[in-house]
Image 1 (spheres, rainbow, N blue to C red):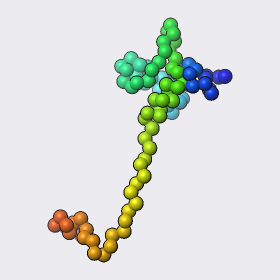
Image 2 (tube, one colour):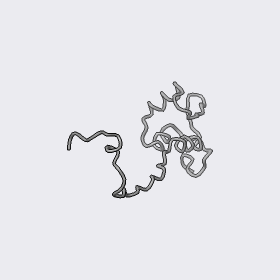
Image 3 (cartoon, rainbow, N blue to C red):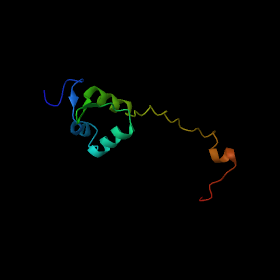
Image 4 (tube, helix red, strand yellow):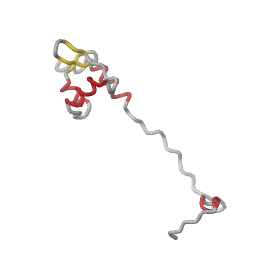
Amino acid sequence: MINGVGNEDALVTAVVVSQMLGGTPLGTLAVWRCNRRYNLPFVKIGKNIRYKRSDVLKFIEERTIRPEAAPKSVPRSSGERSHASMTGKSNPSR
């Protein structure tokens, strides 16, 4: 198994994490660790830094933004008034 692929609890290097995060620079990961900017847990073994693959996947999942279903637009009937006519504001560019 290379770099813990297939094992979520495997420890991976900052280089692998950088790739998993779409090319985040290694220096940025170092700043995040130092400043605790993001809750991305890491393991320090001597001078070596490792991340649990499962923690990185959780970090990505927590920051994934899923668009909500947009409300379907309802065609306006001829009897409905526009926002401008209800507020008394007109569009000066017309």
